[in-house]
Image 1 (cartoon, rainbow, N blue to C red):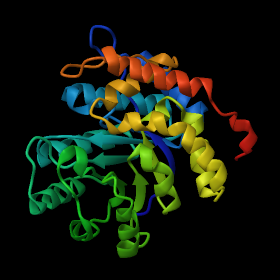
Image 2 (image 1 turned 60 degrees about the vertical axis):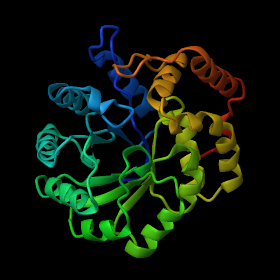
Image 3 (image 1 turned 180 degrees about the horizontal axis):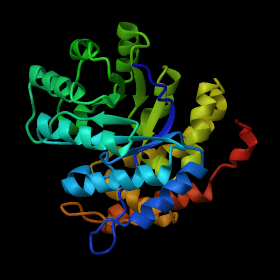
Image 4 (image 1 turned 90 degrees about the vertical axis):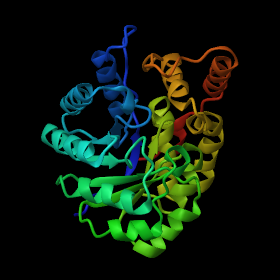
Length: 304
């Protein structure tokens, strides 16, 4: 199975009303704005989408609404964050019928499996669906590193086609490419090493701050792929304080608050998360204010 998952993929937020219910109108507006700004696909119900805070029914309804809103204009991948392999397989089968283009699959939540158990989890889900699957490797957040030997076993599953690489170690990108060639699409999953990862051959970038500044993200990606490094550095240096917001424990709240500041959404989150207060809130406000005051004119880059 071959896919061409390239480009910029915002990991979209799930918008909530003040009472905690899902705000589908806000999500639809956000999707339309992102598509207009040139992104290549989205990850729905990832970490920023607060997957674990939604009920099983809400997850499926959210994916249904997202697919119907997008209407095939961009790729729609769904996060899969479940506590058991059986639950994850059922979810994969359900969203397959809803029309998603692929799955971003995490190891089982709550229970931290051994290497053998993590492999079995991925094999079980892969064999339960025809969807192409992206491995989400994030040992920093989830305590499981899907290492090269584990990846070699999972490479035998035809529909495991991509890796969201979030170890924060850019050497892993080169190791994956040296070991597996073009067997997998490898996408950067850490915002503040995005340019480094793209220059090392990552085919795409799954980003949180792209929700807030999509045009800058798309331009950065295109410049990097075209080898226009000096111009890419200019955007990257401007972007870095923002990108750092994606690497801290309150990344969901930071990104949703940033969306609210620039008029692309609201900051409502579900417990146990709480909106930012005090110094944390003031810091995000200052970072956004500085970014807006020094925003780069992207037209000068003349990218296609």
